[in-house]
Amino acid sequence: MAMRAKIASLLSKAGVARGLASDAAPPLRKVAVLGAAGGIGQPLGLLMKMSPSVGELALYDIAGTPGVAADISHVNSPAQARGYAGEEELADALKGADVVIIPAGVPRKPGMTRDDLFAINAGIVKTLVSACAKHCPEALLNIISNPVNSTVPIAAQILKAHGVYDPKRLFGVTTLDVVRAKTFYAEKAGLDVNKVDVPVVGGHAGMTILPLFSQATPKASLDKETLEALTKRTQEGGTEVVQAKAGKGSATLSMAYAGALFADACLRGLNGADDVVECTFVESDVTELPYFSSKVRLGPSGAEEIFGLGALSDYEQEGLKAMIPELASSIEKGIQFAKEN
Image (cartoon, rainbow, N blue to C red; front, side, top):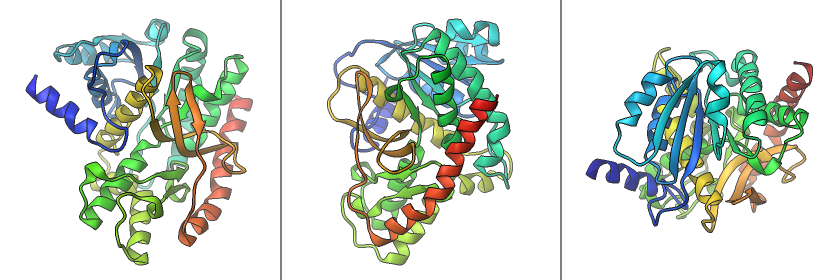
């Protein structure tokens, strides 16, 4: 109990309006994790098992989930975990789900970009989102499968084809970019990372990731070169991990942590908590692009308010301008895939 409370406390201190909820008992929700036997899915399932907002945890994958569920079910927290394996059990995993988290797909390997993952992961996302449209059309969908810049538009097109699309209920999870930006900024500035907030806007790949260090709190006096280096490191954080693991994995543990933070924010929003604000990739009119990541207020209906970018530094304005063509191309690639497949 002490260790579980300690972990929950650490998560709750992860930033402004973040962490696994730990106050008075909220309504218990059903959460489904699709891809739950993978490198992200297993630790993500464990973290969601610890959330006091979760009453039922459905762990789905093509194989291996009964074992994962048996393992996680021994954790002494209230959520009831059950494994579902194979396409024939997908419907049962999804029925009644309030939040569906989708980390399914192949991971990055050395030399791969998120775009290299497209051919495989696009089809996986299409299949899983089609099932969500049929069996839990009102659930909040948290898309982790890369490339998020394309898989979110794919998901939107699939939901539209089924006549159940609600832009307030579809999210690309970009929380890991925020987690990285906060960590790197706090380390460089000598700040308590628990008190740091850094918005990250744009997309979820390379130069489309734009941390707004000019809006970071608390303010720190960092020179231009340092801020540019922090931006580049945030943009290439995934590559840093892939290279460090020398071909044996990608950013699975930090992504699971970030995915749990965002999912729990969605649950708190559903349960009526005030001022739940996260950066996430959604349908948006903040820029000329149809999808964009910025701060979003989460509530009972999902994305209840999308915030503008605020004042940007000259460097950030240049980064925003530079990313637009690449992000537009990735979005269009996803839309065309959904239309043609």
